[in-house]
Length: 343
Image (cartoon, rainbow, N blue to C red):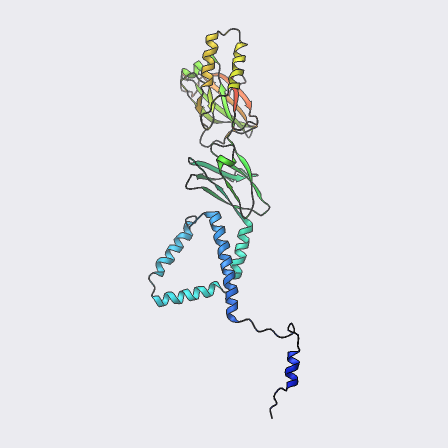
């Protein structure tokens, strides 16, 4: 005979503390809810990482954009039943452990090992170069414009990594790039203008320039002199090496006047004429592949007479040497005299 539980057993079950009673098994659909929440979190983090590194849309990586376009094109040729079956299989795969676990690991690795450097220009297009602070040979180059910022993708960590940023028209700067946020640079806000060099020839050297003579600027790099700018002015003027025209400060012109007054052989008219030529310099830009001027660089300016034969330059007329001081965005004066020319 089968026995039924008596009232004693029912009462005993009721007296068992609630924390000791067996808990009901988690329903299958609850796993789907938790996995769906995990999938949503992964997709949100992936979207934020993508837009930070590549901007909106898929144009940042052409291969991915092409694959998405090809899949959408092929999907349009399927029947309605095939499309529903494929969507169902795909959604089941997305909420499965086979996808969520590897996807989580990939996102963690990407977040803590990659960092973007984004350079946004508010004006004209700018050339941008980025290189590790300890290895200038591994240089990446790009261009930044108002509608298309320059983007660089670096291996980094949350502790940061120093890199050298060079933007055309601005002084080079070492920046710290840490994962996952990286850094956004607006040159107008975050960078300083480079040192501007005003090369000031004497009367004889300026006459040579007006008669077909040539000017060149050299920088000391790795123990040798490298030409970084040159010009044939065909006029009697000083030379301003800078990204854009600048007004000569009154303090600098006052120093020039004191210098000229100390030269007893010059008349008042000659002094005035020299001041006018010096305070209205000819703008000379650096070569396209040359780095901007920055403090502690050793420079040499040379002026040559016009060439009279097959040689590219005539005799050396005047030259001057200088180590650039800490004067970002300011004009540094370089009067020319003899310091030895470079043939």
